[in-house]
Image (cartoon, rainbow, N blue to C red; front, side, top):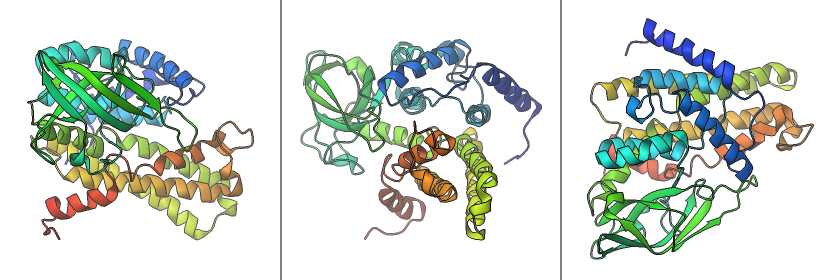
Length: 386
């Protein structure tokens, strides 16, 4: 792996930085997981798309810049460095879109990608069910064949931002005679149609974006199946590899957090001890290690390799690193770290506590880290199953 950036990549970084510094909102937007904040974030997504920054690595005909994956990582670094708004389109752009590029038809791409990138059509995930979270293959939701399409029935839960979204995607059992990974099909479906009920799920931080989805005989045409009928598990694994391994949690996010932690340390080091100092240093080292590991992963991808089960190692590392980094920040701040967003006395407007609350979910979503360690043991290290 070449650790030096090319002149072209350096120029791309400068272009990103200049535009972002001129256009990022001066005041932070409300949380994108609230109804008010989601609407304001969508206005920002429109602005990103119109300037060509919403999906820089996509083909130009879908609104992208045809940037390389290295340039995408550079854009992400600059995006998080300046503290730009969180991406409420991430379920579509970073998870569904890579799946469509690999398995989708030309018609699906033409119909779906540009509205997705601009935020005109927003997407929620419909993976987990009440008794099928990390063990997704045990799902119970079904799809029944009818003339011209399918009828979906069942319940999905923990659907990120589905309370505000237009569409969702997920797995349904299309062959009732099959079990586990067989006989599943990957569907896209509307959230505002007959037979769909979306109900918000309360979160620890008070935001309302999570939802559970109830489907009762919801019609979906054949044209909204991604990949082949009964072969949805293979398609879903491509989505989860993106979620765990590369696109959802780019290193720029963690580099920006580590940089802010160092700034926090300089402000509060008079109350810290050598152990906390070492924790701050370790947080920076971990973020850098993740950054270079990701660049190595992109190098392999550009050489034609796939991420595969290595994405589970990524997921364990970044999720646990995120928790440790925020724990260190809260230790530095001390008792006032318990003050939440909106409290005038809160350090850094209470965002360290909110970030910590969100980080706690990292080892759980996208497949619990216990499951990821099983995958690493069996598929990366080649250890036998017990």
